[in-house]
Image 1 (cartoon, rainbow, N blue to C red):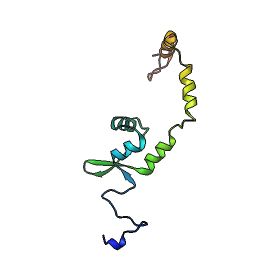
Image 2 (image 1 turned 135 degrees about the horizontal axis):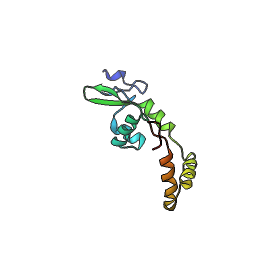
Image 3 (image 1 turned 90 degrees about the horizontal axis):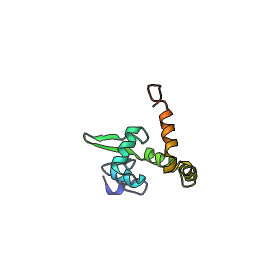
Image 4 (image 1 turned 120 degrees about the vertical axis):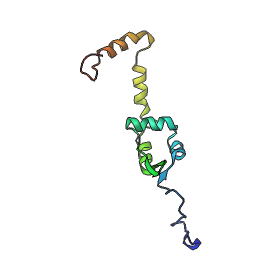
Amino acid sequence: MHLAAVTPENPPRTSLSPRLLRLPDVEARTGLKKSTIYAAIRAGTFPQPVMVGARSVAWRAAEVDAWCESRPTKEGAAEVDAWCESRPTKEGAAEVDAWCESRPTKEGGAA
């Protein structure tokens, strides 16, 4: 690349487009570690990586950013806090056990 072609509007290209993030960058943006990221991918709750080489992957920055934006905010945490406070204590564990036993399984019967 000719040096005259490098401007703020046209920065030099690196080996990986800035629109793609490697795992350390994804970890830094999300605050998650590798095992949690891959578990979320398996669960279908985190963006799938794209192949950038025979043995390397990267994530689209826009998809990771959108995922981060979709996470609950501190204001939304009040809802989670209320749910946690409504959960039974150790003394009320029998109530939880009974509820779990009454839930239908995938086969359609009780647990």
